[in-house]
View 1 (cartoon, one colour):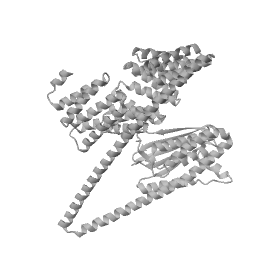
View 2 (tube, rainbow, N blue to C red):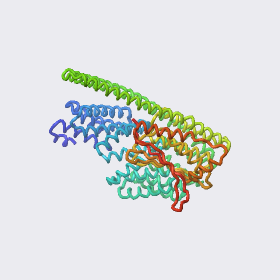
View 3 (cartoon, rainbow, N blue to C red):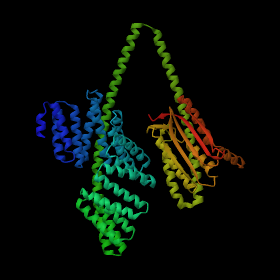
View 4 (spheres, rainbow, N blue to C red):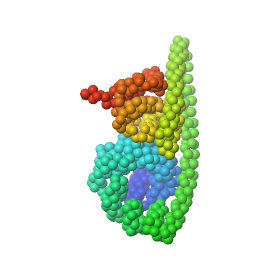
Length: 628
């Protein structure tokens, strides 16, 4: 390394070389990484080379992540972030490299928060990072970020969003022939396994194995065997599960990954215990405990001790069962204490980070105010100069009229928005009353015990509804989440009388928005008037897609059909007038008026070639709008 530095002719190249050397030591020697990154930082500050200074902070942050010192890591990443942001605002000549540095800083901050299970902040910084990489067309980095975002969503049990981002990553990695695509395919398979979609899970596990065979990665292959074993356990094929876990042990052992081997023995021990093969279970549990103690991983020690206690208890060996339960309790207490200490450090770090964010925000606000004041002053000077030079009072009159017209148009637009919000607020009590009626009906039919699950889902749905009750527009993912909760409620109410599917086009961006509770009345009608009168089990399909400047929302059912439903309603003694549909139609009219784009609904029957009625389809054509 000394020879390489001696060949460098100037301080700019030397600072960059020091950073490059520091980065090379990332996986082998964190202490040398700190040493070279510190030298790079000192030199870059001396020569005022901002790009190298920011990269030095990034290297120092990464070295502290490796050593587990997250507060110092986040401090260095934040310094890099501030430096790169200031350079972008100053229109630096190294603008592309500065953008890459800022994206790396955002992504690194996201990694720290993800490691500490602060998923909201992790997601915020991952999205900031990926936005920059998308702008500069760095698709390889985009794929890595999409994977990280998918892992965050999976950790929050949001499989729908996790799959969306894992799939984005896979498409890019396939195109770039990225050797890490096998890991992404395994992540996708795990999502489908969690959803019990075993056919899809098997398909992606198979594709992942093909990729891992082409691009050897023992640690990733070991994880694949472990996950594939869990797949066979879930599909009631214990022999195949054991076969894959034994392969996982062999793979992890080849790279001396004791953590991976210990995890696998825990899976085996639990399966043997479930099969009442107590001798094999005991052997596996003892091996996992021995490895966990060697690498001092408290989480694995806790699980292994509990597993041993359960095995001995099932054998009738109460002395050993009690002994290992005491050891489990002791290890668990140590784990809780360690977790509490870690949380205390994390809270302190988060406080400092948020404090720094607030200060940074205030500085930006000050700069914006100064820029606005300067802009206003310049405009006034130009305005009065024109007035004095031209002496044309007609221009003043024209400007005045234009301002008045703008105010009038603004007032008209605001009036339309308030009328739209008033119609939406009328929907809330109607929706709540319908849900309360459903709860009453469900309790009468199923009893109070079964109603607990129903009430839990109802409370979640009400929270979502109330959270956005004052908003004119909500993100499309929130509308999908509300619809999913509502459909699950109705499934419970009608004893799984129907299934449902919700599809969203990949072309729809995350900030695409629509008015809340717009689709719910049509879904409700499809269930009550389309599927419930039908003898067979029904299906509702809700789809979202984009057509030009329009958002297309469709609700399709395979019920008795619109005309047949209308005939049944007319024969009833008391015909219920659908207030919700009337309000929804008025909301569409107001939307059309406020956006100057078409917003309409079309209801039609689905028929076969022989004229047989196959169901009803409702299509809403909405203006394409976004969250500001």
